[in-house]
Picture 1 (tube, helix red, strand yellow):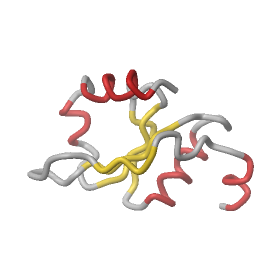
Picture 2: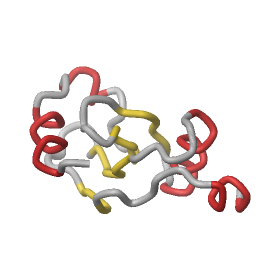
Picture 3: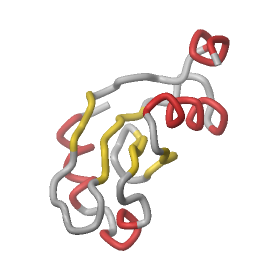
Picture 4: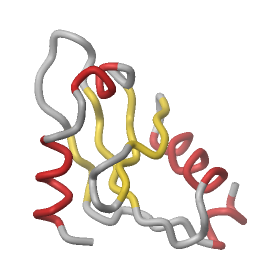
Length: 90
């Protein structure tokens, strides 16, 4: 995962598509070109990614502010590649 590439790709992401996730946590693909899942809570988000994507999928979690607010709250680069342990814990 290249953090610079990820960040550049997120800047180019469609604002219309991003608006669909307002007020939610999102899991960005490792390269920042797509949102893999969104949810109201981080644990729900991780479960959604684990259920829909192969083990080892890299993703970055951030928060999409509600309409009218600006900015994004990233929670960390490479926070959680989907793994057997996270699947077993669910």
